[in-house]
Amino acid sequence: MDSRRFGEFIATMRKERGWTQAELAAKLSVTDKAVSRWERGLGFPDINTVKPLADALGVSVLEIMQSEREPREELPAGEAEEAVNRVICLAAYQRQIERRNGIICVVSVISAVLLIFLLDLMPWEAFLFVCMPFVFLAIGIVLIAYSIHRRRGKRGYNVTLILGILALLCPVAICLMLFLAFALGGPAAS
Image 1 (cartoon, helix red, strand yellow):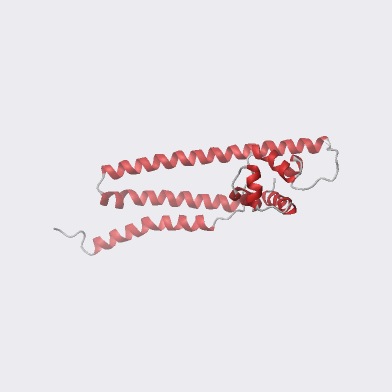
Image 2: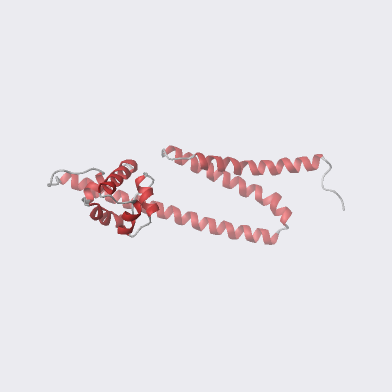
């Protein structure tokens, strides 16, 4: 299912009724940001929202899934089967996104807790010069890998790539500061 074509279809149907994104969102009990995201081709509605969306726009679920108006009343068996397969694929895609978001949340919480424990166990200077370069290195690698994934999916990746490169430059900057400090005589004795 093509997300851009889907978004254009939703936008066209909404504009035919003279509704704003906020008005359509209110009819579906979603945010106007969600409607905007659908119309820009950045995502799909939740599987439970497809039928109410079709009803609100005055089209069939098949027309929503195919992202085009169907002029005929009869529905060939092949098209019905294809529409059902699209719905199943959409549901699987949404489960995949929810699973990915859950994993990201768990990893983020665990990482934050570990960093707090490390900060509590170590002097702040040691934490800054020993742990933080590894943290920034890991963040940089993850962001660059994610930007490559987004680029392959033909989605925007520039911001993610820039943040990944900046995160990789932080450990380099810390190492350069340490080398410069030792080249100038090391830490000053008190």
